[in-house]
Length: 196
Image (cartoon, rainbow, N blue to C red):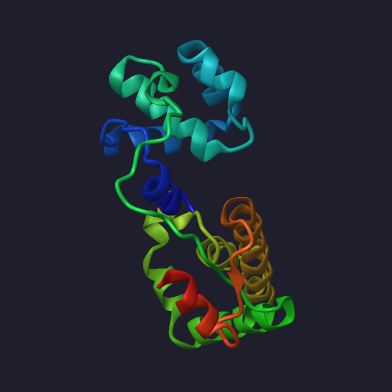
């Protein structure tokens, strides 16, 4: 969703990440929790602190990273101005009926497990605190490897959390697509007509 928004509306530029600083902030989050990071953000960028989701530790860490790295408030990099584009944008949503979508998600998770997702997660345990691994599929299997749940429960949670993420994506796209939703099995001709 972020990538689509960036292509359509542009994106505010922030400095390239300082990986050492990012790792340090994530380590602080793991050992101290979110409250000290929230307090530091409130001091360094009260404007962003007042508007951000204070339960979203990823956003808090990103904002702190920029504040500390640049010496400027994170909010100063967020213009919110839509960039002009020299091309036409047509947004199309591809979606299945809910029961079909859920069945496809469930089967896809089973296929991923059969193709070695658990072994992949085992090989990444030492990197588990990195942001890209704080995602559906990895989190649930790290929980299993920690002994907090059994494998069947972890797999069911991956399916459930993937379905929830799909619902979140559909909700976001509903706000931006304005009615151009199609069933890929039935609407190929209508899709081609719209974009031609």
